[in-house]
Amino acid sequence: MVKKHKILLFGFGRYAEQIAKNLALDAHHVVIASLDKEELKVAAKDGFEDLHVVDIKDDAQLTDLILDHDITHIFCAFDDEEKNIYLSITFKSLFRTLPVIAICESKETERKLKLAGADKVIDTMVAAANRLYYIVEKPAVAEAIDEILFKDKSIIFEEIKVPKGSFLDGKNIKDIAFSKKYKVILIGLVDKELGNKFIFVTRGINHKIDAGDVLVVVGKKEDIKNFKKLLGVMV
Image (cartoon, rainbow, N blue to C red; front, side):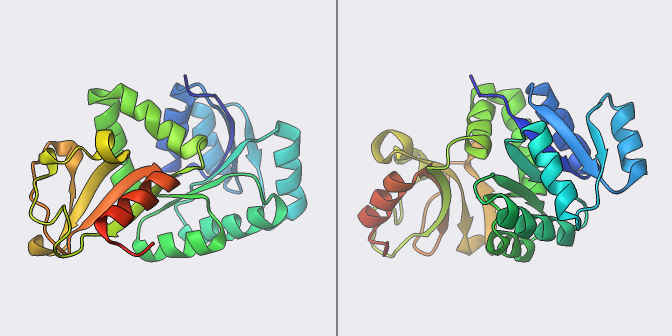
């Protein structure tokens, strides 16, 4: 069973509202903070009670909020991505060991959030679509995703470019026992022949892997490192 947490969620806009509801459904305690009182009114109508008007530029307010509520995780979910970047920088300065999760809508913002110190960065479009799929079709996988987001820091996502002549070059996805043999889970791949289109393997596609394709895998850091060595990718 996934351990429940006290999560400080910043914002209650188009994405944060859905995030809050999903977290609450999973029995996490959600503390919602925003400078926008109208957002908090919407949150109250949705049944959330632990609501706080907070100026994100006031370090004292942020510190009190964390300490007074024994917060275990921070979720930066403002619609304004610059605010999420600012919060990531601030909290990594104030509470270096407190996990910070942030949302983004572009690769550029994802890069900035990682540089700002965010521990996990979630692409809103991809995450929403796939978590919904998992909840409906594979609830056990949904629980595993929660573990990745909230608990096990030894688990990482990695992009790996398939070298020419490697054991994956020319093979079909379903012919490779990624999990059983290599202890990594293939999430999807970027196919160069299809114009850099990202393909989710959760859709059941038996795609042929070619040199130059980019695999997106998840697994333990050491297992991914060993997998890359077997592929002949520099570690």
